[in-house]
View 1: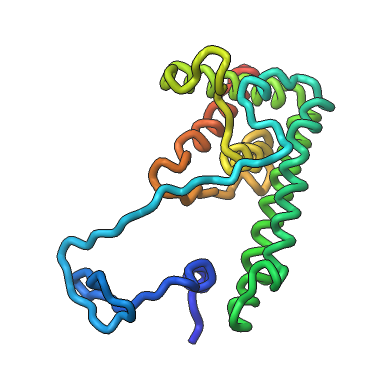
View 2: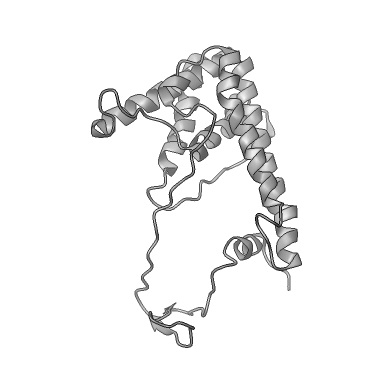
Length: 229
């Protein structure tokens, strides 16, 4: 039967998880201690442990907020951010490699090839376009620098114990920086198609969604002020 796009994506992403039963008007839980699940029970108050997600932030791109706040030179800005686009492209190529990510049926391969990878490539293109806008538009670049400084100042004020003198400094997680950059073109150009796109960061509590959204907000506010609005 035909499945909704979200169901197809969920089937691919959570292919190693099993939904043993579905409750109607009540939740269903699997009693612990079963090597092979042979029994389920209903429960009014379901419980589940959601492990903390640790992001992979190794990159040649600049993530430091204070360093990014000083990149008012187009060439330096491109050099600092361009590795993110290339690294994302390299990662996408591994998704299509059956040796890296083997799939067990044709439908899931179709979902990967027709939905996941094209959407991810579109995001990669938007990140690259955002970097290009910042490099070619002095006002947008200034707004980006101000937004980074504002985010750094906020982090230092909110959690001073996390940033001791001479130690760690505020920095973006990779997905946060990517989210800010893919939003740049739509914020800067009201007539661009990106303006009508609503991007949702899907991450467990504590993963850093708020900072990603605040980064875009800070950039938008700074840009409006610099444009005299």
